[in-house]
Image (cartoon, rainbow, N blue to C red):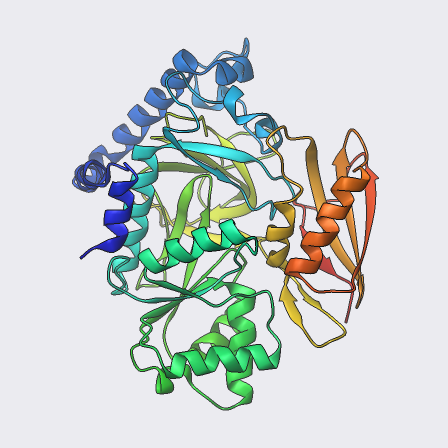
Length: 436
C-alpha cells in the first residue's frame, strides 16, 4: 500500500493528475522546452493579474510587456493577512496553507492550490528515486524538530507514521541523546536519513569519535539527504565517512517546494518542471549563467497565491553547463547556521529557533524581521522590527517557547529596532552564537 500517496488523496490532493502533468512535462523535448517555460510564465502572470487583487495592486501601473519589467517580490511584500493575497475562488479550506520557517528572518504565511502542492510532492519523490528512495516505501530517519504542544506534536507524529518517517528530535543533541539515536539505528531498518545539515553533522562527529560507521550497524541504509543549511565539502566528507552512504544536497523552501536536488553525477539540478529559477543583479535584471546574484523563483502552477519573481533570500550561481530543461546550480551562498551550547552540556541547532518563531509569527505580518543571538551560555537576545514593542503577554509567550524548545533557566532580552544588520549580500542570519 502506498500510504503516503493515499494520505494525499484522502486530503483531496489530485496526485494522479499531478503525476500525469509531470510526465507530460518530462516528454517535452529540449528544443521545445524554452517555449514551454515562456508559455507557463506568461500564463501564470496573466492568471494572477486577472484573478488576484493583491497581485494587481502589487504590479500597479508598471508595464509588464517584458519579463524583466515585472517587479521582484520579497518576503516583506507577503507579510500581510493571507486572505488578502488569495486568488478568486480560493480560501483557507480549499488550499494548502503553511508558514515559512523564518530562517531568513522574514516569516510569513503562504498558500498553494492543491494541484500545485501535489506536483511538488510528486517531484520530491521523482528526485528521491534517482537514489533508490521511494517516499511510499522507504523508511526515513528524520533529523528535524517537532512542535511540542499537544495537538501540533500529535499531528506531526501522525504525519510521520503515514509518511514512513521516524523522528529524531534535534532539540537536544547532547552526547547522551546522540547515543540514544545510535541505539535506535541498531534496532531499525532505516533506508535513509533526512534532516538539518548541522544536526546530522553533529551526529556524524559523534559516530567518528566512537569509531563507528552507521551503515555497519544499520546495513539497510542507502542515502543521507541534508537540507535547510549549507553543506561544506569538508563537512560532506565527515558525514559520508561516518554514515557510510552517499550524502545528497537538497535545496528547498516550504513556499515553493523543491528548488534543487543533487543527482547521482553530483550535479545540483534545479527544478525546471514547476518552477522558473533565475539569478538577478542589484537592478533586478536576469544574469547569464556563471554570474553571481540573487536567487529569484516563479511558481509556474500556483494559482491560489502568486509567487512570481520571488526573491527567496539566497545568493547563487547557475552553471554555464545549464540548458533550459536541465539548469544546474553551481553554488549557493548562505543557509549556514550556528548551534547554541548551554551550560548543562545541551547542544541545540540554530534552526531550533524556527519553532520559537512560530510564537512570533502572526498572519498580520506585524513582526517584520527578527534575529536571535546567544550572548552567554544562559542568555539570548532577540532583535526585531515592528511598529510597537512586544507587550508583556507576548514576551512571556516567546520566553516560554525558548524554555520549551531550547532549555530552562535561560534569560531572553528583547530589542525593538528600526532595521537589522545584514551581511554584505543582504541576508539576515536568523541565529548567531557568540559563544566559542
